[in-house]
Length: 442
Image (cartoon, rainbow, N blue to C red; front, side, top):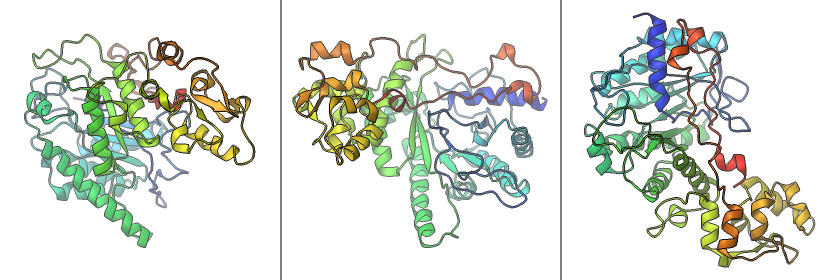
């Protein structure tokens, strides 16, 4: 099989993994080398509008000994198989970088033979890039569940970010859809990475010359919709992962039907709207001070279709509103629909200089179409209406299909693909994974 065909197969096979990002790394290039992941170099992670930078997103191999029901690369699947040697993949990455197609590498793999054997292939690839080719650009590498700690540690000293995909929210879901995997096998490497990342950060604080270890942190991915788990279960798990393992991001991927299996839900399209709501809730956990139990509870275990999670919470707590912009604490401003983190901080800063009225709020970034019902300025209710849920719901809900309701492809359709790396990746146009809350005003 020629290289172009391998790239076609393995690039397409990697599109189901959403857990790639490149924020937070400060790896610098070396003299005579190529690339840098620092602020002036290859990877700037996410742009101001949330656009993801270009990464070569590819599998080392899509052959796999596991038979996970939800996976396109499962052992019983009929997908064409390919494996790149470490030398082939390292050369490919360098050639793509030289042509300005990419700014870094996202490397994952099916389990070839055993977790350790797979990690050794990936480690050899990254070692060639860092050593032989002196590549200082961004590299995100997967830690294969079940691999030895020594291999994970060695790869962590070379990669900028690593991730261990937990995939399913509950152990029962793993037993049903991925019986070869265990919760301990996934959380073990995650805990190992968290511990060593913390130790490396402490060492770097004492000495800037201390070696790097996964400087951009770790992430993971959860599949939404492959099991009957509720949104509350997914959000609680994400909250626990953030708190226990200090993850940089939990990524969510709407389940894409990839084959017939009695264990899988009978859906005809990915639950993209549910994925979008989960990202919104995740944003509220990380930046707005919410807990999973505030956004959802046993009485409301699923997101409301026409309301984002913050708006739904506000409607359930109308006794707390409206709040006075000139006196409300920052934590409360962050809970107002239509007020984002930046606009809340601007309000707090501006009111130190003068009292704010309703006309000043749009200039501070407040989305008044939604926020006015929940705010007072100088003692006057900005909305001028009743605080009745029936009145507010149609005015603060989206009420239509989410703008993020279309799954974007990493690659051209198979019918459009031609031979050769340039034809397979004509513009390296990766999906616009904007943070939905940030894009539309929280």
